Length: 413
Length: 79
Image (cartoon, rainbow over all chains, first blue to last red; front, side):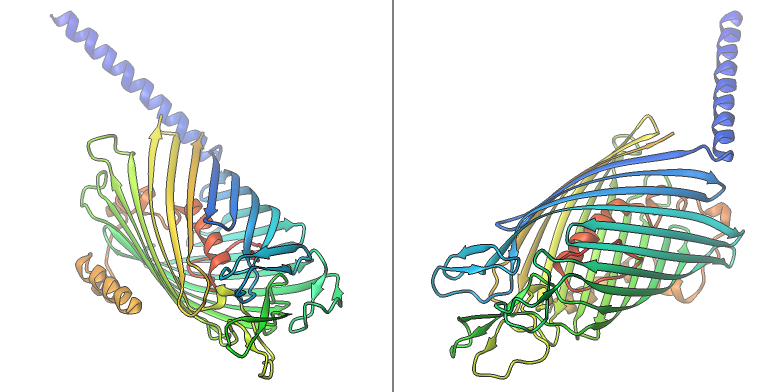
């Protein structure tokens, strides 16, 4: 009996020693900065009768030292389908020439759509480095390329911890230089689409400033408040969007179309607040509520409200790391001051006009559900599906319906 | 109507939640050894960063607003 007890004790001690050695080795590896994190994500987005997008993302993150990380992300997007050009809906079936030069036809009472196909490749390199014990920095370079558009961006973010890390102040600046090279050249905003005067390429500059505060609200909740101000200048038109001159009924197109013309300067502002709260006092089992609200306004008179809720439910009857996430997002936008469905042919054409439905008064509702599970402590699998419904308050366009699915694998070693 | 619903939801969440409004006014003295819950992965601001990045891209291409809690990536968003 005693021998059996002794054998059990020896086995227990051996197991504990092995666990301790394994943990120590892991801690050593982490202390030396040998930790890697790899993520592979596939994403598919499909709109009813419009566009579809397939996207794959591969990212690698390497721990260089204590709180110091280097990460590289590569994104590939393949987009096909058709999107509204901005032309008014014809009374009867019609054939027209899209802004990209191709011949398209549309049925009576339907918005003319412009077909397109595009492949986008993007790279993002990010370096997170502590400057002092209480001051962290994140530096990012990104580049994205499509055959008719490229963007190069730089950003820096400083995070200063205060009050024993109960409060963090964030300061950030981001700049982007975009090069626009449409298929048939850059059209001059506000000119007739029959005008063949184009130039090869144009530029757009964007500067964003960020000021935010993150604070521990209590033992199981934290909140953030962020203000962002942005300035965009240069060629801000969408080169593929047009607007129609309307007949005397102010509804049907006269047949003459113009390239849209937006102001060459846009100042944007947003205030974003977010609260993350664990519902349980027991750290291992609590569901997590993540709520955010954003108010946005800009110099084009676009205003919007966005409310978003994510509820993470831990599957208590199963393993601790299995969870389900429910997602709800509501968005309401008020139109830009130069948005028009079309311009009556009898009226003087304003300097700035756009019939791009995305600048109109609209609302979007999104619902989604996701599931995640950890395997072997190092492998995380996530999948989710979402449904988006967008409707237009002052536009003749049919509502947009879209579904998306995503699958992700995370692996740490 | 939509705005009212959003505001009511925000208010209810704040009140029914964790006393977040009061906590925001009065700093909570949470010591570092009491941060086991806050240290969990799902309590981090970047817990769903991949999902947020993908969502932002869709909304950037379908709505006129941009910005919020952080900087976005590049791209046209034309179609």
